[in-house]
Length: 408
Image (cartoon, helix red, strand yellow):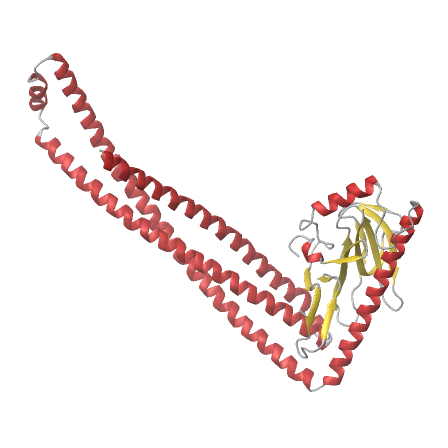
């Protein structure tokens, strides 16, 4: 009896562990599926915003960056799809083991049930049951025998119900297995298609590289001009921030620092609220893609040439508006000579900057709320792209917007 109890406990533990494993795998599958869908949507947006026919006259430098961006997203999509396929493989193997175990249980149940039916048949007559009761030595023994007969009948019924239940479980597991195998086949097919597309994109990139090498001077000149423009914008942004810090500290009677804001209790509360939302801040546009990330990266054709982006570049639709990522106060309006306009918003001692705007809807000193429209993003007349340059600072220190904006 003790051995049987231990065995039952062991079976219960195995069932619980299997159930928890299945729940964990299902949860992981949902996360991967959401990520895969997001990457597929991102590729669609890249095609729509960066590879439409009207954009074909864009510079080779922009085409190279767009292709590189698309290839990176496609490679990530293939990796995530592989993860999903491997996870489904594990789930299928678990299902196969569970089906095998259920079949064994069903076989034992049927054998036990057959034995019960046989014994019942042998003792089925009313006279046999009556004689079994009447042959009791006393009333108490007769009562116990009656209880035994009732329990035996109940046990028989329970065995029958157990067979029905196990059969249904087996049927459900088989159906689940068929569904999982279909999902796996679909994922494999999608991954093969993605690999084919990736090969085409890499080939396009190679062709573009060949054309660039044939006109190397023009390409390097375009890089130099782009880097010069970026440095000019960066210097102006940082100059405006230092000026805003000095002006704010002077007005509050604290002119000892030009690198950090002297915060009032209200400004500190706002800064704390901003900081607590790290990784969850809204995008500075309603819809778009990150076409260039933060930091230093090597040129695709000439690795010795380094590009720096002190913020992120977001490509969106023509006519799109820039919007505030958090509540705050407009502390400066940028107007770079020969360039476009920008808006700087102070959130305590954090500053968000939105550059490459054509029309502004706010002015210095305005209080703005999260999602409030700041201005229309400029559309380049030569290549038709609409790009917002977004920067984030804490006092005069650069921050990586990708760490702060949700899924950027």
